[in-house]
Amino acid sequence: MTVVGVQAGGVWLALTGLLLLWPGGMGTPRPVLAGESSREPLAEPDRPDVANSATVVPPRLALLESGWAFARTRGAGGEKRLTLPFALRLGLLADAELNVSGDFLRYRTGGEDSAAGIGDVLLGGKLRLRDGEEWGPAIGVQPFVKFPAASHARELGSGKVDYSLTLLVDQDLPGGLQATFNAGAAALGKPDQSQAGFRFQHTLALTLAYPIGPANPFVQVAWASPADAEGGRSLITGPGLLFRVGWRLVLDLGLTLGLRAADDRLQLFGGASVLFGPSPANAGPPNRHGAPRPHSTPGGQRATPDAFFLTAEALGGDDDAR
Image 1 (cartoon, rainbow, N blue to C red):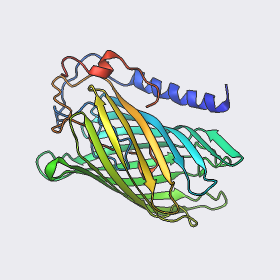
Image 2: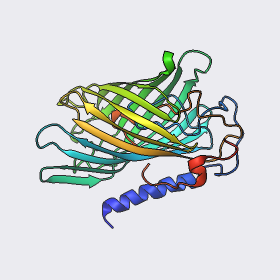
Image 3: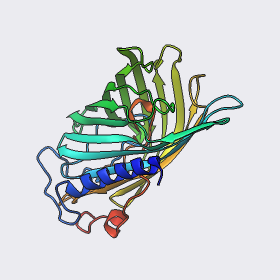
Image 4: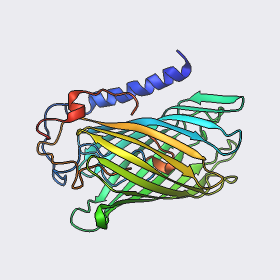
């Protein structure tokens, strides 16, 4: 087994251990807690779009998101990249969650040069400040710390620690549209190993979705200031689709197009999200529109399921939940 295989296997073992040790079983319905909506959907992933919602994973539940993303840079000899992202989100309180995310694999190739390895690991959380059920938007904040697990020597990562904080805003619009807006700031470690300190980056992202039954088509746009002194501003856009299969499984597919010279020319992505844990005792339909909101990964690099257990409950949900 290669070093990359051992590293990826270690990540899977760690995630499996967290799922097994997380409080609650797969079969016993849990009571709805104070401050938690009984009609909240069981699975609302943050992947795959560029804007994360203020929705949090309910207590005692764990949401595993992962998938794939293929990107190609500009130019005749453009570099190609394949990533297998993941995110594990753990419900702590009615308005708070803990999450771990990153890439199981990063592979890049261009000309005669290629490299592969695990990606960086992000540790963060999400705090919902306002649910927006009565009036106005739902509001939340999402802090992250990036730990440099990816190889800097193989040009798979910066090799430095990054910090970020993002404001999350959800708003229902006339005509059944749903809007998710993010505004973020990040302190990025300078990739030059001889330099200390940070470079600051600002990000804006907007997703507009129109739920149609179990399907949720969306369009997205994201802007980012330069990540380093040589880089330029980023502006990407593109369509996508989420599709709910039962109560615990959501599939996604889409693409983004880079509009600036610093962006990837094209990125294709797809994946799935699976919820683990007991269902609320009196769970209602997914939401008033019947479909999940669309969502992404921090800084527009998104991503996240690749391998998971698909039981009858995972596909169809508990009888009590229906």
